[in-house]
Length: 294
Length: 292
Image 1 (cartoon, rainbow over the protein chains, first blue to last red):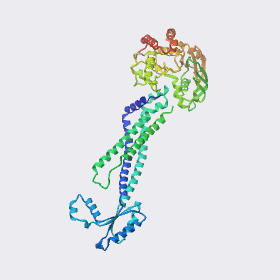
Image 2: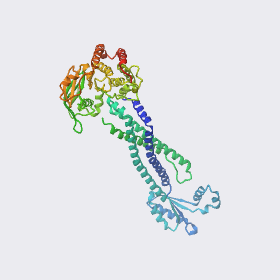
Image 3: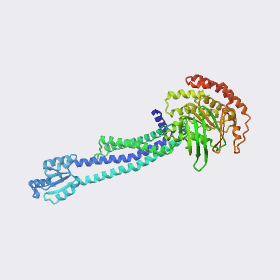
Image 4: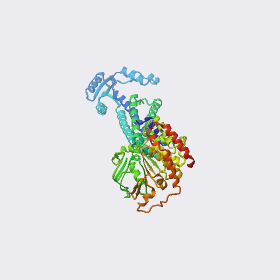
């Protein structure tokens, strides 16, 4: 019954008439969402990295060898002991040949280093995969006094730091979304109020001739929705391009893979678009309500 | 068509604008509401549109008690009640056509219907050929015609006019009254609040006089003076303006001339006839109407 085209044209006309106000509202939504969405995506980058480490081996125990009076029998007994611990998921013995391969891989860009070394310099080790990463400190403590152990390296610290960083980021994302989101809602409410004020004569006539409240309000609600959607779209696009830029330009930080699965990005991006549109709609509903008492 | 029963309206702050008003206005009647400023005329108009709520009493419009109308149904009431005001309330950024079309567009009518009806009603009010003009390119009388066209384009059964000639000179007012008279002949009930003695005297219609929120007289085929004799309060001088006899003649002549319109209007299938008639009227009036 009510023509969508008419209503939509009306909303766009409104925005054109107050183009700076509309841009302002859009930017407000953009700023509020780009920070929050950026933090969320940043968190995902970190999470996917910790995930990778969590997948891998957490503790490397480098072993003493024959010169220190330790035999491969000692190695085997240590491995058996570690395997018996409850926290441990998997233990792998890395012999000299395998270790040498790793070494070569690690220094493949530095031939001079490789020239100076051979397989005899690389120590044998056992690699431990934990069931729960949190238990790394206990394991480390137990292994430290063992006679066959030369040195222990633990990924756990990095993991822990990253996961706490990720938790912080998540909180920051939510906090920003809440604070800036409400700022955007209020700004849109004010924008819509301005738009209503600019058209008060028209609205008075509409009421006079018996236009339904819904018909009077809907262009303003659509205007808010468009502004919210545009702002959110800008925010998602900005984060996307920033991510691409970071991928291309921060390749030096090899330990941190700047990568987010497209599925995650699409899902969260869509959520933010909906959130932006909803914020715009809600904001304009707030602005409209005051003025629309018949 | 309109019935008020014991209607009292007290504004915030305790000003009583209407006190226990009971009156009935039949379908197709043309009624003048007269009375000094502050007598409650405008309040009555506002109550009929539900722009204000009654303090006590009931108002029936077209068989419905509008004092009990839920808020969301108020627009429906306003669709059946056309309104014309002293200050025209035209949108300056829209042309004559657009101003009139706006009233239909915002009710969600399809474009084809809007165009046809707008053309028809613009011709009816005698503004054919001026459809593309903006309000500031029109005289006061022409602007009021646009406003009447807008209020009538939806063919409401009731038309409320609050001082429609208040801003117009006597000669222009005659044209407006002719137009309202013609609309009345289509069966539209018209309630017009006015101060204009000459018009009231010339039209010889029902006159309801209000004073201090009460009906002090209600006379069929009355004049402004009739109402004065019942007045208890000192009113402004009620001597007819010298112009009055002319206006009476003109309106009377128009009455005769457009006697068949009532029949015509019953069948809206004859827009050509209507248009021709409207244009003739327009041509006849043009010399009198000063273009500002």
